[in-house]
Image (cartoon, rainbow, N blue to C red; front, top):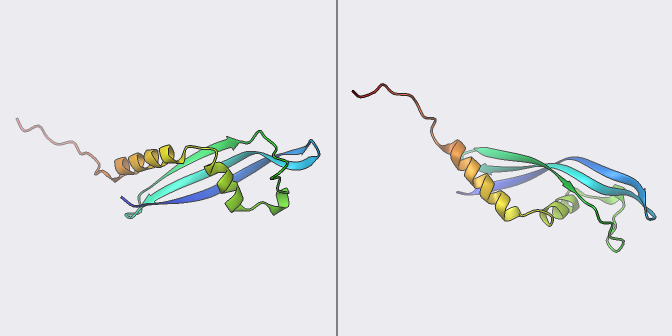
Amino acid sequence: MAITYTWNILNIEVTPSYKGFSDIVCNVDFEYTGTNEDGISHTIERRIPFYKVDSNNYIPYNQLTKEKIVHWIETSINLENIHKLMEYEISIKARPEPVKKALPF
């Protein structure tokens, strides 16, 4: 089952000032959607906290990109487990709805 995954960044929260840096990303709210070839999809919504300020890799807020935020998320979560969850949820949604049937006796 081929699944296409898409990211949607919903919100970014920052710490206004800390240790000489400004607008440090501390929380990211996102949606992650998997869609199979039949158009059946499953979406998870999560918040990822970021606690460390990396002075060697600090990026000013106005220079952040969606790609960079997605990279931070991908390196902070177990993407393999999330893909397994998505595959399972999509497979459940792909099953035909059960119907009640009159008893055969």
